[in-house]
Image (tube, rainbow, N blue to C red):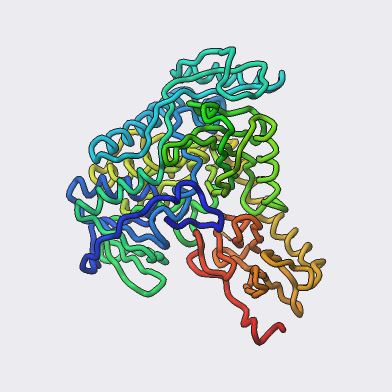
Length: 511
Ligand code: FES
């Protein structure tokens, strides 16, 4: 399986079955954009209901966040229920819990129905505090968990060797192998006659004669009654672009000296940003997965440092044999702590649906979002639709946060330009490095590969013209504004942009 970064995730070690070659289907009742967990969950449910369905995937199955997830199935979300209650009230917070339980149940039903072998393992969750301040916060979280209906208990032991002064345990969590599950969904969907077209980037969707006209970047046209966006943010500059913000998380997998030290639980500390621990299986052996160091995309000077810090952190806790994987992955935070799932806001029709803003809970909300969008297509209504409606006008804090995010975007833009004025020449660029340089008054993004070959791009993001930043661990040009990402040679990795970076005619401009 391929992914949107140079580092390999443990989840990529699966084979995606060869997709059946079917006759070109230019009209489908539903076009699903994106073949991650959201798109596949929706498409499978729609095929089960007998609908004609085509998935258009810009790259390959699982290429985006599903292939780089940290893979927890949690009803105790990364956003604490204290925040959800504060922003949305206790009743909605209870509904959120109900919906997360529903998501796990959907996964379990698919596993059973389609006999998907994906290491699904129910387990407990733990959170622990290392100082008084964290303890105070964790006690508030425990209180909020109990208010929404999660049984949790104070414990004197946690399953990792970290020092703590206070800890809680809560049941009903789970882990699984996300891409084995995804491959199971692909098989189930294609066995039912569903189509997936990889390498097909949607550029534009327009209303047309009572339906929708979908144009791809290679000028192919599809038509559909409904379009389901399973792409984080729909392509292009859209309202939703401004209601979610891109973040990155860093993940490592370690072989421990003693396999039995791998914890059979999901464990979270209370640091800011927090760390998480869980166990993954590979070829019959257990490994420790640890992650954290989250930050806003392209808002960190040296991404590699996050891996070094994560490694130092884990070495303080465990005797390790070796690190087997490390990678980073992108997710989108919503402005008011809850995902947006439902009809695309501001449209006169109810034919376009989206699901985004999952925070660090993409497998849960991707499953829920896929199922809810399918329900809306099939029946015009679904459980939980009010809570997650993309048309909701959030509480006051939402507006403030939105302004902060937008201010952040502007600030970054100015900072980049100022910074660029001071950047010195190409000679300082090492092999394997990328940098924005100035060339005769123009900005130029240059990457030098291991052999010394140079790639030069125009660093202006093709989405809304922010300046991209070099990500020195995933080797990509990342946009700080809405999270579009590009390969070293400028080709598009992930939206919301729908075009590659412009290239400099390097051979003729720099020697
Ligand atoms: Fe919006 Fe780059 S992703 S400007």
